[in-house]
Amino acid sequence: MKSRPRVVIVGGGIGGLATAHFLHRRLGTQVQLTIVEGAPRLGGKVATQRFSGHLVDTGPDALLVRSPAMAALLEDLGLHHEQVAPALQGAHVWSRGRLRPLPSGTLFGIPDRLLPLLRSRLLSPAGLARAALDLVLPRRRIVSPDPSIADLVVPRLGSQVFDRLVEPLLGGVHAGRAGELSARSTVPDIEALARNNRSLYLGLRRLRRHSPPTSGAPILVTLDGGLVRLVEALATRLADHDVRMDSAARLVTRVGDRYRIDMLDGQSMVADSVVLATPAFVAARLLADLAPDSATVLAEIPYADVATVWLAYPRSAADRPLDGTGFLVPPEEGRLLVGCTWSSAKWPHLADDNVVLIRCLVGRHGDRRWVSMDDDTLVGRVHEELVEAMGLTAVPVHQRIKRWPQGLPQYLVGHQDRLDAVDEALRHLPGLYLTGAAYRGIGVASCVVDAERIAQDVAQYITKDVAQDVPEASAGVRPLTEVN
Image 1 (cartoon, rainbow, N blue to C red):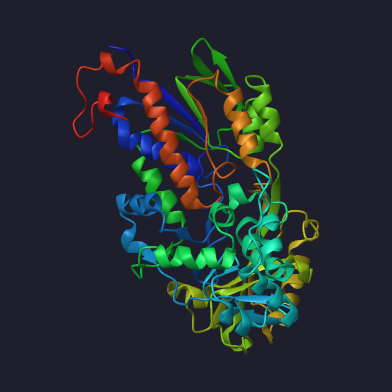
Image 2: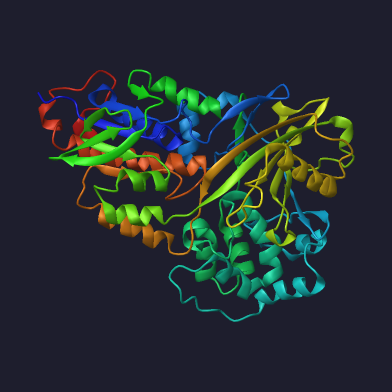
């Protein structure tokens, strides 16, 4: 009987942990799993800290449970009872000196009704008339196989819809500029609308009419105790496997039909399969000798520096009602702020009679004005902008900043072509896989979806040669020949 195949997963963020979890679910003790993480903790950008008497997230703060894979993972881990749904719906856009309601019924800024757009006063009369032209303009042929979001939106709805709705919404998610982002890789629903319909407005209305009725369940949730609860639950499930922190990989090379992972501390290990669940620039360094063509392409994927700024204000400082989840800021406003969450209003478990908790996002692709500021200067600038937007009447009583250098990958035009080039360059290296936010979705739920796909591919690869040598499966684990 052959020894159990070994899989080494480089990176202990959500992508790496979820890949290990799905492999454990499929193969149990029939596979040796080793996770190596260079940081002193697991979770990557999922990070929870105590702030002003509450546990708050300094990285992502919500999970898209509309994704079946995400919802199923929470159920599997026993976290479904810890989900917290938003207390409020709706948001605002800070445009032309005031907060204006984000029109209901938009899909990444594309409206399906004109009346809410009119009431929001986000657009000038000329901008509203230009948006309405989408109803009568002839079909526009999309020549580019990978247009930017601006290429699809501006010719149909005009520049004001793009600048004041699409840009802030996409910036709040991707910290990017929608004129540079690939519609195909970033908002495939919008690309499909543009390619399959004469009018974006009418196409979205048609899509909504034919969509199954909603169940009323929340689309986004957080976890009581912070998203670190997801990391802790995954780590607990993997307790019987080899999980190493403060253990950074240096290089991946080929040894016969297996792989050797050299570590920065001088040690090395050999694996039948390797999963690189790291940022693209780290994967590029690890593959520099083994797959230089792939490394070159991976190094070209740009990242935006971002920061999360948590501020706590006395309850009396907020004169205006916190009548929504927060607000977004269009790039054309020239502010440092990209978006702001009124967390103590949005999340019931963060409600506090004494303080208002505000979570601010700073940094977008191409805007590094804040990077050289020290923490106090950055807080001062953010506070000034909050005073202007919200009319706050006091200074914050607590502050917490988390900087994320090279925090968010940018899916620029040509992103899918880059992924295809990487796949082609790695075709001669069976058993080597890439996963994580740099490739097929930046959110936690997208990373979970991709991790499940990668785990299936790894399971198929490592079991094809050893299944015949395993007489029977362990109790509670499907035989290897049934894994597909």
